[in-house]
Length: 496
Image (tube, rainbow, N blue to C red; front, side, top):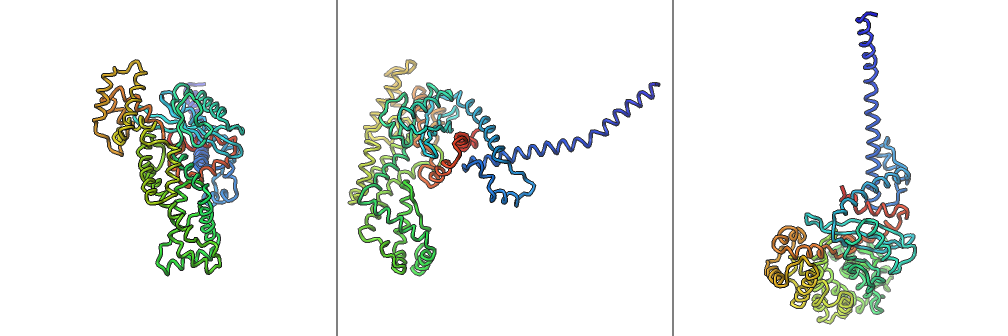
């Protein structure tokens, strides 16, 4: 065979192969795009499930499938087993990222709360100040207690979480919601009660008082009547129109959050004049509040106002350093004392219970942390200030690398003279930069103490109905998926 023929043959061979390739490339790209689209769909669907949170089989309901089909008939909805596989995959991915983040973190605070679904569970989160001066918060683990809610078992579970996440020796404080069995139990860490949960305990105690419990129940029955009787609600609105009254929505609340009870009682009192007319028409006079009951409700509302004023000083979402709690508690106590002086016996009940639960605000364990917050350091009374300075000296004296006693006195006087930072400033960032330069020996202690958070749950769940909804939703999740769903519910948006 001549070289010309051989060259033509090789050229034709290459040409033949080349001619076969173009049809395959679009097919490969299309199949790859399809796989990528399905992966994106599964991921987005999983994010919807964990953000609510919901059971994995919620995507298999007939109504959900009909809704998706109506939007996109060609879209294939992943099955529960596919979503479960995706859940495991994303959980492993985010867990690995969080482990990397925590490896470089020091001075960690844990938060924990027990809740009941099919079994009793313990949810544990962690908090620390990063090297940029930001407070970081993550969910770590949700584990079953298998009916054993003893202090010993809860401590064992907490130690297991520290071990599993490599936090042994890094955790110095644990903030707990509820779990009264841990109160006054000796631990390797500092025990801190959740501020929001303690306020709800104070209110729950108020609700249990014989002279008030019947009034609370009657208020619920009044609102329930209008919620269940459409005609009665229509008549109420007609009467309010004639009287030119505001027509706020009636709130029916059955839980134990004091702020939601306050909203319910305020709405009821404002609309009670019109309600009485409806009760008379409907022959439901047993629901009319008498003079004594009305007076009690007004006292309850007035007594709860100082709680509302105090908590309005807090952020509305996420977690907040516990350093703001002492000024907040002083505002609360002062407000209750004012109400007591006006003859409000309900305010007196709340004040006594607050003193029992929170202690003496003028000589308080939180004085040290409040003192180390450059926004709050001048909001301490003299007694708390002396206590805080004494604690600072004790803490730093235990550190061999710290300055001498004389040098520390000079440093503390300099810090006391420093103008407080603005309410909106970031105390963590301030100590990472300005404070580190000016008061170096104090900065490490400050960043450690200020990392203690005020609540065991995010603030958006602490006082609102969103907290009740979240508790109801998580209680319906399959136990085998609960840990992963709650982990991603808290961490997926913030770990990248």
